[in-house]
Amino acid sequence: MSQISTASVATGGSAPSGPRRSERTGRLPNWALWACFAGAAVVVGALWPVFDLNIALFVLYTVVLGTLAVYLLTRTTEGSRRATDRLVTCLVVSAFGLAMVPLVSLVWEVVSRGAARLDGEFFSSSLVGIVGEGGGAYHAIMGTLIITALTTLISVPIGLMTAIFLVEYARGRLKRAITFMVDVMTGIPSIVAGLFAYALFAIFLGPGIRLGIMGAIALSVLMIPVVVRSAEEVLKLVPNELREASYALGVPKWRTIVKVVIPTAIAGLGTGVTLAIARVVGETAPLLITLGITNATNVNAFDSRMATLPVYAYYQLTQPGVPPQFATDRAWTAALVLIILVMGLNVVARFISRFFAPKSGR
Image (tube, rainbow, N blue to C red; front, side):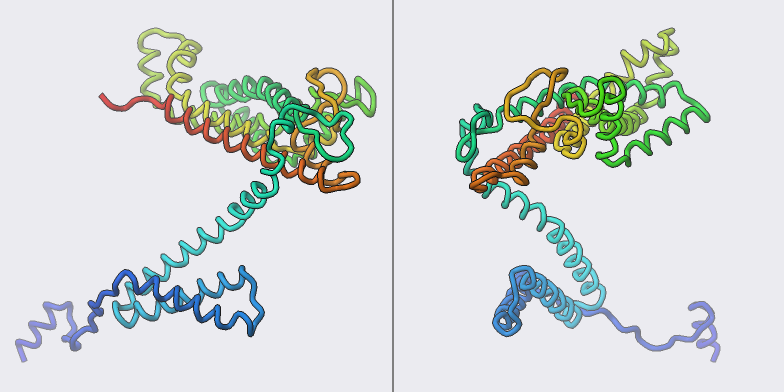
């Protein structure tokens, strides 16, 4: 009796209640998981004629049935903990695959339809005198490059200086007010930016005006808050010890910012600016209002209409003419060039981030 009491005290005041249920220690071979999904694909494929499935439903049912088979097989062989782990793994991988479906499908569709007109004529000729077959997007490509360069020239200095002011100088209510306005501008619909630029120029130049600089102003409204937010977060990452060391040497604040803070954050600043450019280069709605469209090449942003790739693709698809197939092919090729341009900007951002990143090794 005393031994039972001693054991009860040693175990926290309760008597032993029998042996615990142990987890199974079996292990499934690696091929068993793939066999579950292969068997699920066979079962769903056998039911295809009965339920009249399509490719999307076939993949969905195969994933669901295979995941259920993996869970049940793992639970009976390796235990509930391992089965739950594999169930969550299957769900995460399935979610990733689901997110990749529209991306892969979009890229495949644009490449397959746009590659046919990706030739020298598309990059060297405009649509002047073109009714059906032939023609290109030289004027739209030049317009996109000019408008993007003007937008960058306007947005980057304003955005960087605003970010520096918020991080280094602004305090209290002023800082909160500017931050709030930047957040509001980040969520402004692009069509509103186009209407703002059109209304601004219509006050001075009259209604119906269309200029390249108007498109640059409209895109700047969208690009500035992106530059401000990205630059602000990068500048906050610069250690305060670097600033304090510079101040201790008697260096004024403006020189500390120019010589210490900005060089330290140059990689992140360059990446943020590049991604901001990639964000606005494909905008269509503001340019529809401010630039319009033209079939001729115009490189003067302060004189008459200009063509850009997004608007070019829009008009080629919505107003194709007769026969419509040639204009549709040009629209898909313009979309492909835009995707290549955006991907190129993202690759440049990666290189900037890696090349200009501060070296931490000895």
